Image (cartoon, rainbow, N blue to C red; front, side, top):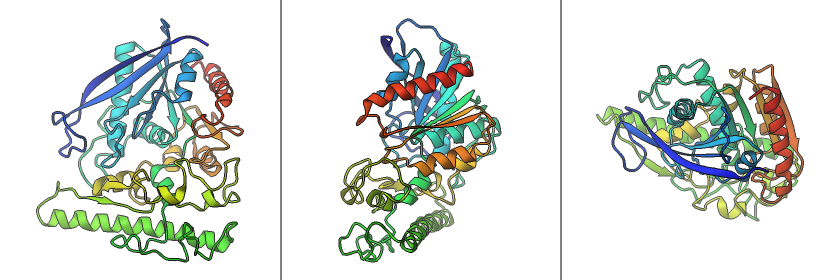
Length: 384
């Protein structure tokens, strides 16, 4: 393995949005921080670009391992680094596009492969969809935002590595359906509250219960979306079209898969989620979408409104694509990899499974060499 060097850097790009969701800095400008990791002194013109809506992955085991294997890797943090409470997916796309432009001018990279790890998978697909055939001129809340005129440079390939379908789908599959009233989130339907020992349904769950559970999750997501849209309409009608409201969403780590290994079966251990005990995380501060805003809900969490729809975007992505599933992953289960692979429009696509590998390769670091060899062979076969 090569010794690697890490080069932190940043750049500023223009975003004239009237509404600002990040702390500090001048209006109309966005600072994006990145890190380039590469073999010491190497001057390759090929790069793997990782990004994630919330960023923070420059030291992920896979990122470092690819660099040690001889690859140039850049990790791009969006403007929402570490805080997705007001995140707008369309603005993540703008940040990613600005990063690709900067990679080509600053470092002279000629080929760019998107490394869509975890939540970066749906972001990569959303980006490539809009880079090839842009359509978006406003956010789901109706605020002007021009991807059509942004001049987003398409990537040369997309890799979906331990990726989920989308933030909206993932949240919905993890939502606590026993919450029927967002104003009274701790008054819960005992028949759906699987984290309550008194719940009559026990694993392994009957098919009828799972169908009812999943339908209630979707219904809850839609109720929140309807409430968000109504609030935005009220603000606009009162002469406050740019006003925003923040709110809390309780109960967002509740999935039958974590308690019943027969649901979406894989090598993952039962009784836990990727953040620990799901009974605690369900209402803890780190659950998905715990703190959000009206506009952010529509852009990243709403099933009906989000444009970052992994399978929908994938159906319009026809560049070379690689899908890798980790079979002991607690976050991104087999059905997500399968859905993404089936949806991809590319005629050059492959899916592979890394047996017994967990989401971060922390429990099984020995699996890193396997995935790095697989990725390297796939890239070299395509001269990427």
